[in-house]
Image (tube, rainbow over all chains, first blue to last red; front, side, top):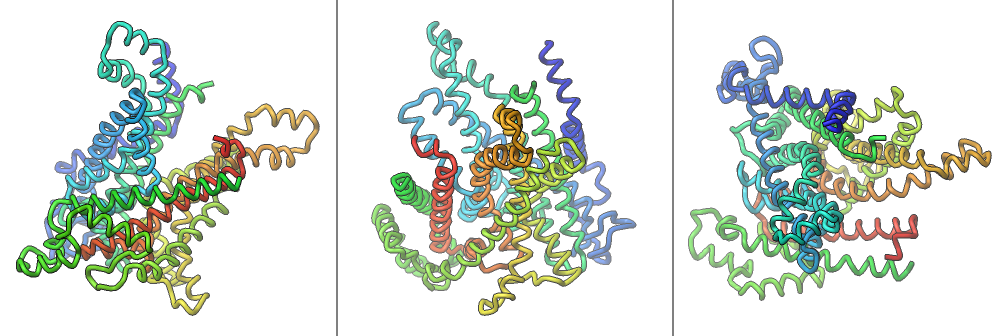
Length: 279
Length: 313
């Protein structure tokens, strides 16, 4: 209990982590509540009010069909956050399992898994994602799976290193000596020990996933209109960048605020959990 | 050292081979027939069969694979499914644009980021430190293409200082450089964020080392302590981290090329995906794999050069 108190104290002293956590929570709240707080229907077209400047009835202006930008950003945030969270969830499950298995089993399986992970890691995630989406075609579920796959080797790497160390610990030998099976050791003894680290990286990589979503949607391989996401809103806006720059600027700002707050939060949690920094 | 370089260079081949195989299998096992995907759902059976034959899809899988790898070994990247032109020629035209952009971005990132990160570590917890940390964190939190759009708005649309479309007239060096400027800065700012962050933390780690106290104790001037003892040791981890980000940079160059319509490798790839030009996608992926493998090999060699411990394992 005392350690927990100290951890919390370190965390609350870290101002940027607090600001990040607060902002991230706010972003989640606002997007979850989008149906209640968005001033307009995100799909409703206002033919007489297209490409309106920010202000008045439309605080952030309207797009070429007269759709309200603020409402679309709020609704788009639901999609972007959902993609980020689900993709990280998929990558975390797959990658952590692979890293644990490779680390605990060792031998040929280890070699095969981690070699594959290294090859994938040496490749830019965006290009891997681009290629997979090019084959699968645009779509929400496909995009989530693709980004999840891109993140999988990263989680495998994070899980693998500590597993190698933990495998040699006495408590694992003890568990083995009383006859625990490999699967039980991995799930009950190894997983809880590496989960903290994995979750911290997960927090940081939600931001990465959101940026991948935006990038792929910007290229036109992610989520197609009319469903708003921050990425395809920027793409839509770019065509009018000379006279309605806000159409691209505002969704981009939404990405910046969200990812920045997640990074600040993730950095803060890492500072707390990294024993090397707690001197 | 030479043995190390040769060994590392030889490792490039299997890496490219693995990626080529993955790409090949991915395209073959993808849901749907590529020929139907290209021609559309209303194509006649004959047309689909003709295209399948042209693409070699009616051959057994191992035959296709052997053909593909055999042609790769000869440097033949196949012909575009859409235009019929050899992909190698397109790649040769696009590659210089991508290399110029990535190199320029890297130089900007290093020149800006190294001093900023080191200063930030030396002046820890001052206004300067907070500013540079906030800036680099913001740089990590923003999609690279968004920075490109903002730069385009400011310097291309609002002030009209720099051109924002294309790569310029290839015969006119000044024109090429002017077209390179905004994309390179947009990529460079991203790199700068990474470099600043890693240089700062590497420098902070070194500053705690005992050998710095020893150096000071023997009466060395502070400048010498910092430049000869601290900086050189801080550069080793920084370079290894930076090498990882060079790969990220290559990925981001795709987006930058799209924003600024630069006719580079990334634009070639994205255009191919939009036209479902599978041979071009496949070949460009292999070219990217080769670039990535070569960059990794060069980085390892450079790293072995700086830190002799690396060579002996």
